[in-house]
Structures are given as structure tokens and as C-alpha cells.
Length: 114
Image 1 (cartoon, one colour):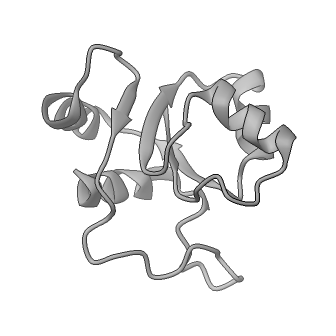
Image 2 (cartoon, rainbow, N blue to C red; image 1 turned 60 degrees about the vertical axis):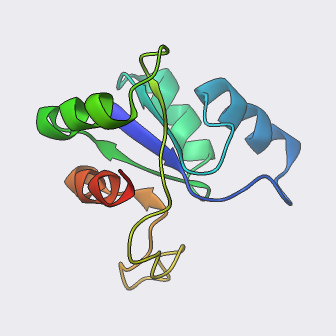
């Protein structure tokens, strides 16, 4: 299961990217959705890579996410901004950014946002 967290807002986004974000279900800033890993969802994530943070979520973090921020809709969660802020949104080649693929580090980001 892949967790997608929207980091950037709606201002200045081209129409195709905005539609893809809507189809993924991340319409608002700091919202999180869970999607299955398949070629279709990975293609959509690749298109919105500069607006979201994503990675594989583990069972412990998923359970904690559902307990603290659960809603009637099973795969959509509203999160707080990250504690201690965002160091940098973009990677700029040094690996400090929030956007893009985080792999297993997405669990630490979600825990900061609960």
C-alpha cells in the first residue's frame, strides 16, 4: 500500500496535474490517501511527483493513522502540518526535500503529521 501526501497547494498548477491530483483524491494540502501499487496509480504519481510526497506505509503507521485521524472514508485522511516544519520542499540533489518518493521514510513524515 502506498501513502500519498499532498504538500503543495493549488495555486499555479496546470490543468492536467490538477485533474490528476483530484483523481488520486488529494484535493487539499496535507491530505493523505492510500492507494494500491499498480501501473496506473504509479503513472499518476509520476505525473504529480513535484506536488506530493509518497512511499510505502507499514502496518504500525497505518494502524496509528486510522486510530488518530480515521474517518468514514477509509483511504482519505486529513493531517496536520509536520512538526518542526518542512526543511525544504524540493530535493535539489542533496536529498533534504519533502517532495517525491520517500520509500520507508514516509512513515516518519506521517508520524510527524499526526
